[in-house]
Amino acid sequence: MLYGGLNGLISLTKNEILKRISQQEIFSILFGDIDYKSRYVNPIRNDEKAGCFFSWHNGILWFSDFADIKVNRDCFELLKDAYNLNFYETLQYIDEYFGLGIQNGNPIKPKIVDKIVVKKSTKSKTLITYQKRTFDRHHKKYWSNYEITQEQLLQDQVFPTVYFKIHSRAKDKWVTIRPFANEVTFTIDQWGGDAIKICRALHKGDMKWITNCTKNHIGIDNGFQGENLIITKSYKDWRVLKNQNLSAIWLQNEGMFPKQELLESLCMTYNNIYVWFDNDDPGIKAGKKLKEIISSFHDNVEHIYLPDKKVKDPAECIFKNKKLFYNFIKLLL
Image 1 (cartoon, helix red, strand yellow):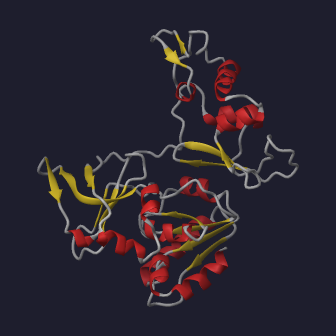
Image 2 (cartoon, one colour):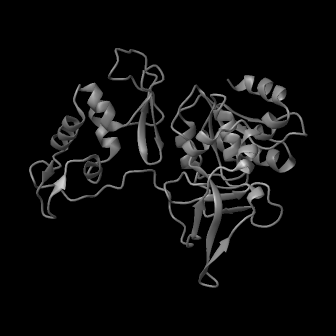
Image 3 (cartoon, rainbow, N blue to C red):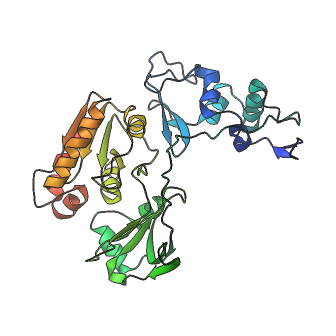
């Protein structure tokens, strides 16, 4: 439904509400001020034990309850279900509760940008574009080694790539790179267009990895599972672990740690944190360093790595030594 205002007609929508009031403030209708380190009782269920928590993912603040049929709800969904409203009635309730004025045709001025803020570097971002292609036999063979399916790749926004372009600031022009088909080139595009990461998986030489991601671009999904979180260093390792129903996030590489504020927001909702990098010297050194950082705000952190030097990471282990892989992850389930 449209309403009038100084800037013309606007709709009563989630986006218009979130321009004027934050997700935390909407949740405050049910909980008061939110403490991200605290546990809460689900207002929908007759539950006396506080076991629910809040966490951010991709700019959305989620309320999570493992004991509920629907594990994760945003502020609109939780308010709707708690007060037994339909979706539009929920929007009307929020508008009236905070006096946003959208329904009466006199909306207050927008003021909110509601997400975890990551300060942008003053350095200009490298411009990269890419062209998708179909899954050919090279891609299918490569990913099948790690028991990763085409459907999972598409779900994760990972696409076979026929070519990509990089804008050269020095030459002020676009440079096109068209890899050979057997190099198995793919693009990870799961940050909403903010950044991408391209890999020529079997390429020997320069430009195997091409990216404009920063250290704060973390690979994560919203499927919370269990009390343990594994932090690894690549998409491929992450997907292998996720396929075993393990909660995991992945970093850009072993040498790039996100800012502590972001790490805290991701780790605080889990009882146990496991850092699992490569079992070579650089990987072990980086794993120990990350453990030290997380230990400054979390009590239960372990650095783990595979005991067999012939396989360095989760993906390589499931490919070359399945027995070792399944025995090792028993400790994490």
